[in-house]
View 1 (cartoon, one colour):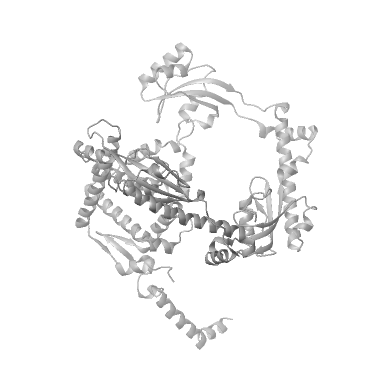
View 2 (cartoon, rainbow, N blue to C red):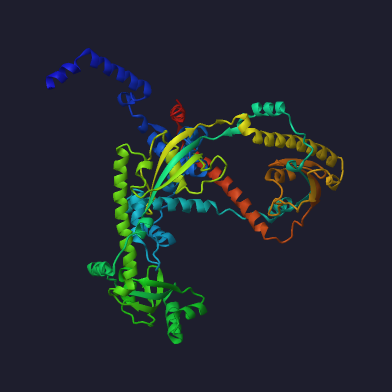
Length: 629
């Protein structure tokens, strides 16, 4: 064998193949292995003495792309994201982060490990119900992020150091009152409109079209008369709840199950408490004294304006050790002395003790009966599903095996991917439609899907029996639609022409109410509009935006659905610039934020003079083009 391989390696065929592969690698960039660094290890940008590799940028780009898919479009591709500049923005963000990190090191800013641990302990999502730190959840977060505890703390120390530096930049003076008043005066100014609406759907006098006109409209607008792809399906379902109804469990079986599970049914001692946490020992001592005097911790806490939190069904290992030791040494009705933990000083009232033990047969037998029925139904469902797989593998159809295997069978003729029938309605019976439709529209005629398990005890399987492709509906089948669409088109043309005449008349000073007698036309006076919170919900957004760009007497128009809207600026109501208004605080905050952003931009430009930034333009262009072929 080895000699044969040796002869093969020396043959002209293998040598030619190796030469071809070497040339191919060179063309596609794999030749970097021989020429120098592989593409992933090459540097796309340098910041001072720090470098950003292609691998690092691609990793960050993947994270940014995942976020963009959530905010922009779930089906956004990597190539599309590069085309809209997401790769460049990712690189720019990483360069800015590197600049800030380098200045943090230059300035000697270093958040302590103690500060990070304190920050973690303060996160409500990392606390148990009793306020203790949820170590298990923290470890799950570390595992999900593939980080060690020290690696996570180091990462958070760096992030906290960034916050310290950026917080310092936010310390700019508040906006001047003059600037706030001037912006308030402009944005709070109210504008009142004469509004005339032309409703195309209410315009009559449309003569009935002849067949020639209808055919011409039909031929010219095929997209209006497209029918979606329809599929005929056979759906079989199996429910463990239905199977459970046929399961009979006797009391003798229940007693035997109860005896066999005696140890499993044992419950540890549980305690119900009320807890108050305060910041210092003196306050805790005072609260405990008041609670003992009143015999009511919750009432005493309310008088002291503190929150009393009830915690029921606590087991000994569910509390922090310091609290557990105290709580499980108390008597029912007792109020504890103050207990110190990392969260503060605790005062505890023990409300109830549920002793450890096994519940009696009579109190638990119905729950046992339901559990046994469910378990037997699941076992039966598993057997049926296995037999179903075997029967389908043998070539039998769902129709043939439905009755034999106790499957619920549903026939659906002509359903589209949205779950609508040809009459535009939803089918009366379609179990878990989203799963079934996804399977049905992913397979060919005659295919049967795998058995789907919804994890709730239900199983589904679907066969695609027939496919009617998408296409333009025949004229006769679509005639009613054609007539309705033609009429709507003619109404829209008349409405548009009417709106044009009204706009001209309003500019010439004619009253808006003069058109109320026209067919499909109504007029009204708008609510006062401002660039703060004053609005008119009956006006489309693009019209509201135009209102603040026109002068008194000028006209703006917009289309919303089948309505044409014409609006004339009838009046402007100025406000007192020095008037007290809580909205001024918001304006001041916006000015400060704007100035803060400008200051941050100036700071980053300054850092570029200290830590020069260089980008490999050719390499970046190559990365932009990845996947474009």
